[in-house]
Length: 435
Ligand code: HSE
Image (tube, rainbow, N blue to C red; front, side, top):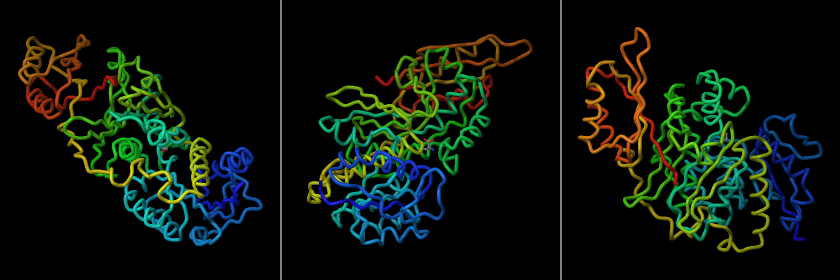
């Protein structure tokens, strides 16, 4: 065994409690795997957490005492947010500490600056727990799939959103009602709009895309659309057509550049990922050599996320004896490979679409809609039209299109919405076959 490795933990919330409990409970096996004794020598937290026993451990109320502790080798940042956490991480790096963080927003917004600072100081910043909780997706992309040119990846990377969509589908529950339950169960972010508007998923997607394609982190370039507009009937019609609606983060390399987008998506119900329900996460990664691969597991929670944090602590401990240039590169590529590649604006992406419109129940309406679509070079792949209920003047018309460029689809929709016999706006959900 090498000399002990001293760990300092900042924050004592949900993930920190899981991390501390795993480190204490599994100490023997963790030390055997790390090749050195990992010891928590300092915790910084404003308050205690009844879910973990810190008896006998040094706890300071000022978290910066941890990064200033000369004995600490690895600082574990688990306070969240992008302000104090950023100062804390940069201070730790400046003090020559290695950093392990679960903070997706911090890496997504400030990762480039943080990695540059870490490179300069020859220290490691590890962030497995930042994406998809307990799923080792960072290591899968950086190490397991290192032989591949990644073609695309698509993931359910927000558990709260997946829980809401699952409950709407299985129990016909209303959106707001399910969101309240997700908050009460502690799945949701402090600001739940981060979950339902796709911001949390965008943070995670930009990190995955950087690892997959060797591009700098640029959160501003991710197109983000939430799930708040999905109506219970969309879930039902999708099902009738053989699809499930999932809130996906998608990163795809195409000829003209890279697509980076988070939005509700219809996917064929027979895909494994279509059957990932509740708060679980899953990511499909397609490599040119391996083909499609699927990673599934809990995307949040104390011990699942703590499992990834501890794995990173072990990794860092193992590499402490390596020279800085031989340590694992932050975004999976040597610095000279990380290149700007154009991120395509959403109107240039190409995908298929689910369209739901409310049309007047009279002759000729369907043919007008079909004519606009066909004049725009858009083909109808499937169609449902329901009979009018007694006394109702409008009926729902549901269409699936072929793959088309988004700006062409949008132009056709503006024409359709201008028809007198259509109630605007038309509901539009993107559809991916994920083959
Ligand atoms: N709010 C997040 C989710 C927590 O629901 O997935 C994990 O990042």
